[in-house]
Structure formats: structure tokens, C-alpha cells
Length: 118
Image (cartoon, rainbow, N blue to C red; front, side):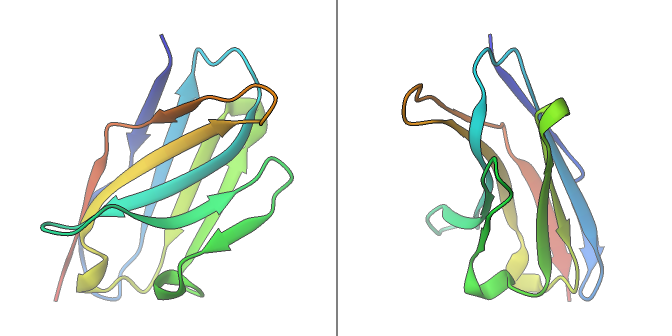
């Protein structure tokens, strides 16, 4: 059974940094896109950032120049470096992985809480 194990969440003061990790295991086929979503209380889940197998990245406007996504294809692991954190970044962060169009699949992590205090 596929597992996505997230780590690195926690409580940090505004202006601080956190690094999230998500390791995918037991995935038979190659991963195309890896990404991070977040959901704040009372709000819908939103896309934060993605990275393709070729290294192309996308970022939500709200996190550009503060967050950096990276991945280690050999380890099926994606990272999210979050700097200059703001209270509005407080949310549960979810890892997401998707397969290529010729072999589609999609899996989600269990979520990790990030809380930024003012």
C-alpha cells in the first residue's frame, strides 16, 4: 500500500522558517508531479506549490519568494522550505503526488500542522 509520510511541521514565530518533507513509498510507477497544498480552518484546500519530474516549479502568489520546493527523485521525496513565515501561513499542509498521463495515479499525505504565531 502506498504511503506518503510527512514531517517537519510545528509552531514557529512570524518571520521564522520551517522545512517540510514528504517521502513516498511503495509506489511502483514513476512520479510526475509532486506538490504541497494547505488548508486553513474554515477555508478550502489550496495549492501552494508543485514541482514536475523535470524540475519545473509553480508557486501560489502568496508564497512566491518565501517558499521553495525541491525533490529527490531517487528517494521519491519532496521538500518545502518555508522562510519568512506569516500568521496567514498557518494551516495543515498536505503532500500530493501524481503519475504521468500514461499511468495516472494520485496520492495524498496525512497532513502536517504548521502554526505561525504573531
